[in-house]
Length: 275
Image (cartoon, rainbow, N blue to C red):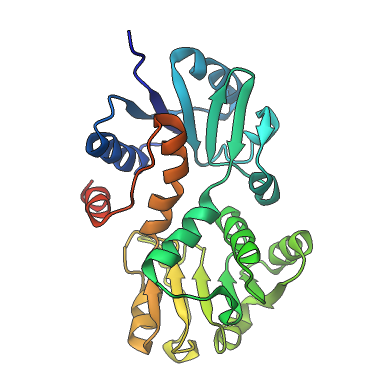
C-alpha cells in the first residue's frame, strides 16, 4: 500500500496561516495524493510533537511564530543559512532526527527577481526598515547577493545596532528619524516592519524622500498594496508586493516533502488571495 505523504505548518496560533491554501493548490495542480495541514502546537509541547510527527507519517513541516528559533537546538542538522539567520522555517524529517532550514531569504530574493526582472543587487545601497526575524533573513540574503551597503533602520536603535554587530559589513545602522535621508539615494527599500499592515499605522515616509529609480518592496501582503507601495508607485519607483515572498519560500519545502518542484504562478497568487 502506498503511503500518503503528509506535511504541515506548526505555530501558535495557526488559523491565520495561508500556507495550507498554497500547498493545497500545488497538491491539486500536480495531482499528488497528499495532505498539508495546520497544526496549533504550544511551546511546551514542541519537543514531543516534533518527535511524534514523523511516526505519524509526516515528512516535514513549515514553522511560524513562535517556534522559528526554538526548533534550532532540537534539530539533528541545521543549514548554514538557518544558523546565520538564527531561525528556521522549514523542517524535513529523517531517520535520525530533522533537518532545519530557512527559506525566507530565498523567497524574498526570488520574489524580487520575478517581480522586478533585471534588478541588479550591485546597483546601490539598500535600506532595510525593521530588525526582527524577517529582517534577519532579508539582510543575509542581500549580503549573499552582493549588495554593497545595507542600511538597517529600526524604531529601537539598540536592536538594529546588535544585528549590525552580528552580521558585520556591509551592514550599517541608521537612526529611525533619519530614514528619509537614507532613502534618498537607496537603490532598494525594503519594509520588514508591520507598519502599513491592515490594522496598523502606516509608515511615516514622505513620497519625495524616495529615489524615483529605486525598487521598493514590502513584506506585508495584507493589504496587497500597502501605503508604502502606493506612494512609491506614485513617485515612479518600481514596486514588488510581499505575497510573492510567502509563495516562493514555500517551494523548497514542498519539493522535499512531496517530490515535485512546484511553480509560483498567477493562478497560485489568485488562489491564495481568494482564500
